[in-house]
Length: 331
Ligand SMILES: *[C@@H]1O[C@H](CO)[C@@H](O)[C@H](O)[C@H]1NC(C)=O
Ligand SMILES: *[C@@H]1O[C@H](CO)[C@@H](O)[C@H](O)[C@H]1NC(C)=O
Ligand SMILES: *[C@@H]1O[C@H](CO)[C@@H](O)[C@H](O)[C@H]1NC(C)=O
Image (cartoon, rainbow, N blue to C red; front, top):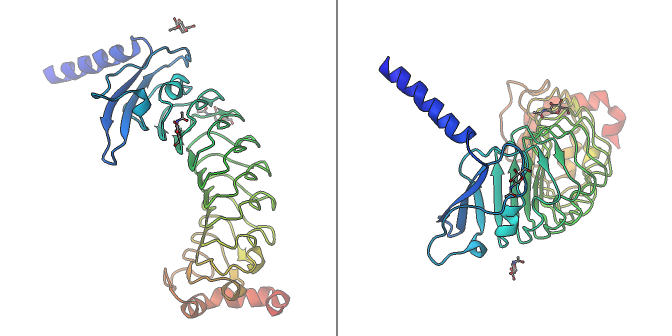
């Protein structure tokens, strides 16, 4: 009994300590294992104010704001916006890692002064509802950007306008239904893009076309049944593609064209009845994962490492394709 009362009191006191107090932004500073001077950030800002004049916390000896390279989150922050003082104060920041922040909005002031940032990781836990078109306009050095677990159903068309150096873009676990067709146009240097776990049903043929250096493409866990012809055939550097957990019934080789560097394809958990065997002739594929489909369910191996094994392993899928599309298989 005593202990129960004790815990109830403790919880109550802790809650009122947080909810009764004024807004704050606080850093605990330390040098990370990778030798980066780090601000371990706590924010309490339930009303989304952006007029902070101070970030509290004491620097390590001989360190200053200009030395801070890395920010990660110490306490689950409570703030619907990302206060602009953080980028104003830590001008040389290299990595900003904002996760589970309850962010609702990202505006063009949030990252404006983070001019040297190369890695921005926004993992917003389903709250983020709005992101302004100029949110990243000053972040010319970005190499890796992650916008994950949000409530966004699309993104503004010009949002990546200045990300010419971007190599990795992770847009997983959002609620994207569609994306504007020119959104990826500036991303000539992109190597990896993840669009998995969204609600995409179709891809505009122009959408991915500008990504001429793409190596890894993840489209797992969407609602695709069909894709346009030639959709991937300009990706001559493509190594790996993920199409797991969609609604594909037939895999056509004309989605891919001639792709000698394509080595791995993931097709788990679709409703596939047929695959065009020309896929093996036209690409470098030696890893094909097809479990939990109609034509490859229980009696196939999960993994293969040569074209010959793949040909025998998924024979049923290839034969079905010849029967369904005799003219396509002959040309
Ligand atoms: C910030 O704005 C709020 C609400 O308008 C106000 O109450 C507070 O005093 C302001 N803080 C500063 C530091 O100006
Ligand atoms: C950004 O990086 C460049 C070169 O790495 C450096 O000269 C500059 O001082 C850094 N900081 C800002 C705010 O541009
Ligand atoms: C997510 O967006 C939908 C509409 O797009 C809205 O009805 C819902 O309230 C939003 N959820 C949150 C947590 O903001």
